[in-house]
Length: 389
Ligand SMILES: *Cc1c(COP(=O)(O)O)cnc(C)c1O
Image (cartoon, rainbow, N blue to C red; front, side, top):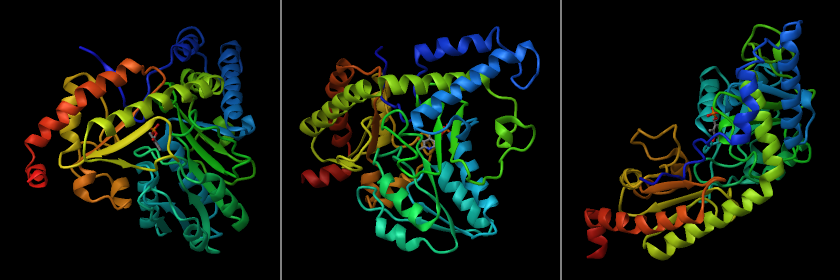
């Protein structure tokens, strides 16, 4: 059976060059990088080199990069760490209602711990209102945490404007850029970002490695206490192979981003256009243009997204109903709900997210099998029968 992977926002396959780069650190170079003897030398050098590569992709200094175990840890570290370090200064955090659960649930935890949190609403495209952000900042605000691009809809936030506002108000700006790194050029200095999260497995490196950029001078309390690794900011013996992989993935992203984005955008637009031409009653979720090149989130009205996914899977096509983190629950997506999408339309949503290995044949195949699947499901839908009369 065919196997077509259109769920790259959930995770990506490991790039062959990334795999090759990490193998030596799983085999011969197994030393602890903190040791003082020969076995430490090569692993330590490899971590330094990886740190340079991550920093180069983000436009920062190597010593502003802290390696973590994943994007979720980076987000927890940024929010809890800054809040703890600045607890004498204020008790207010601002975020949005469409963040990834690792930001949203961390902020809800902070609320239970006595912090005040503002969850900014979004418009039907999933965008925040910049005036509302500006008006929400008080002299008690210590942190604004807003994602670069949404994992479910691909909507890209006005990060440059957000950075201007937070800098002008003297408030720290954390940006969850897990979905944007490698797909959108990011220069943390130009964008006035103070902290930025990224994750290896969304970037063709393996699971279990991430990073947090922390601008020099930003005070942050460690999440994991222990040894002196990562300049006292993150204890624990380093995941050397994972860190090497993340460095390589960032190097490849710098080298190949333009070419890959052009390829992926062309295929995504072909899929979008093909679906709209072939199937009636389809609604695009997210911003029509300010959107990640990888992402197409559409609602097929009158039917369930989950049923479409099961049928696609039977034909070898992997897609998603929104986020891997919420699948399995019957709740409609919190992102689509926040955008004001009616629940019955949110239930019909399917997210296709493309990657570097996808081909024209993949898209042609989906465009061939999807219309009959939708037609058959609609023929069994009482809702659709009513519309058809
Ligand atoms: C996947 C994802 C995360 C979490 O990253 P993990 O490495 O899986 O913990 C955080 N934010 C966004 C936007 C994501 O898409």
